[in-house]
Length: 243
Image (cartoon, rainbow, N blue to C red; front, side):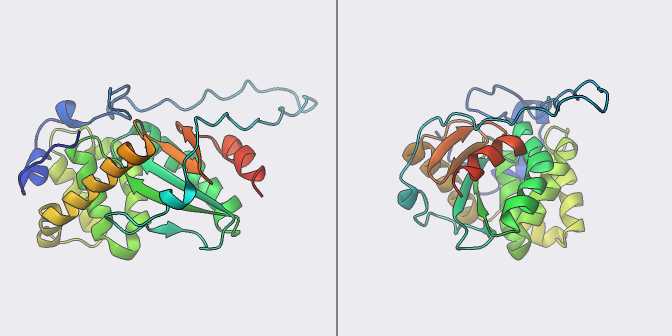
């Protein structure tokens, strides 16, 4: 259940020790932002004559949702990465302090963008599903970045170790935000915007109640549900079967 916090609480809590605040990628805190997922161990080098790896099969869907209902407007407008008429729509629910979400955005998304989004085959909609005040703050700053939403999300995921679990996240986020064009005043104004905070929480609440999101990242690909940080091979297997 999303807590109701005082107007300045999100900004104030950023200065509290990250050990108590950096939630993981699920309600049960299966992992913490202080212990990011380890990348897959590289395969042992083989001779040039080795047979190519077998094609990856599409992972099994964990269920499905009504796509029309999923795409209905919510408390915050969807910011779409890709063409509106793309045949495949990917809706991702993520938390800014989730290491598995960061891993997906750093390793899978660049290839997904090149192979499917930039070519008009798929589009991505990222929705907020924060588990702690720091994740709420990250999403609020991304929303306040306006047209630079995805660029700010990208920076925050890449810099996650530097702000999500440090002693004073406020100063760390301010430093990152200054590089994105924020001033001290606009930074504080963003993180004390009660309506924006309420709207971020409303997006999370709707995801949990209507679409049964309980961990991050959770993907809905043309209505089919997939949980966990999918690889580009897994994404390709799913999307190719829909084209």
